Image 1 (cartoon, one colour):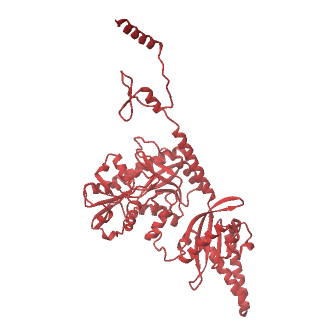
Image 2 (image 1 turned 90 degrees about the vertical axis):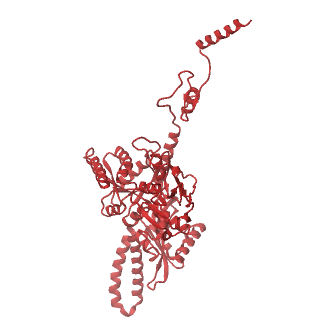
Length: 549
């Protein structure tokens, strides 16, 4: 039955793609299925409806994917964009060059957040489980081994509390549907369950459960976060562009996603989707490195591997250039083999010229320092960032080009990298020609042929344009939100008393008409008496006066 539903959901998506938009170019958005393929299509359809309404020359379709299937589809170039959980996004970024465009704002009723975590829960009547330590020897059920929030974050939270997954009686995996996890706990099929944040609230809003039926274990309260929570918080799902996807289309999609309204509900989309400027996913990367999960299975074994994955071509060119320079120096000193030296020197010179040409064309700034912190190699982009010629940079240190405070901070970071033997990636900013430029910098150690520390490298990429675009999008969103806050209007059917003319409000209490209108609009009232009412009141006064003895 499940396979049939999946087949018809996919068939429905394909028919929608080819029937009304036969002349438009199809753009495939792969989404990670959480509550099953059928629910995924229903949930994410609002995104493609919105994009199709605003980008007419393309037709966007939803393609629900299981975790392993989505990676194969990305590797084979079958998708143009993906909506992936934080761990899967990091994997796509490192292995396939994906880049995030926006971070999901999840809704459950009228509350929303761009962050997510794990919720660990039991039935409300389970008095024997009140804290995480009570889960020892108990059964816990969650979605799948690859589910980021519901299992990876849960496992990390258990470890923080000194509990190994081996101490549990068993860990059951219910598959892609988070609903099955909740129902298994409700029906007593497992002692405890773990799902991503906002799932319980969504099921409660849909009338499938009552929150009072469950009790949250290790409950945390984070200011500004509206959902039930048992763990640390991480950025929510990422909407990402794949490496082969047209950049202009990606920019247009990103701009529209950030303007997508998500503050109202209707029968078709009871849980509206919103998007925020892409968050920093380094906390997710750190968690994957800590547990040595893909793509960091060998994290820490080879210090330069992460830097090679991120800047493979540039780093290879820099290292090859250094090797070529060392080779040239060696040949110049070896006067006993003059003829052989000349031939090898000519070959090395040609290779070095080719390498230099390639390095000069790269948009990344490449620096190499010796153990004393002196520059031994920089490319033209690096010289431009420092505002000096290459000749004036070689042999000097960072203190010769930056303020003492900035130089001290970089030297401290260099010392940490060289002592730990691990690469680091971070954002920095420098002033170039009087303008502030934002850089994504990777620093790492370098070793000689004997395996001894010989110096360090740094590679900097200018991401100023992306930062400015993010800022512009954020300002536009704030402007729209501020404008919406000022709009008030009366609409719909107003329940009014036929006798006293009072109005029933949303709290089922009765208000004077002028109070109700003031609360729901910008109108204000002043009081007086019309001529007809004046005559009626005066008649009453005259009657009372005539009746007096």
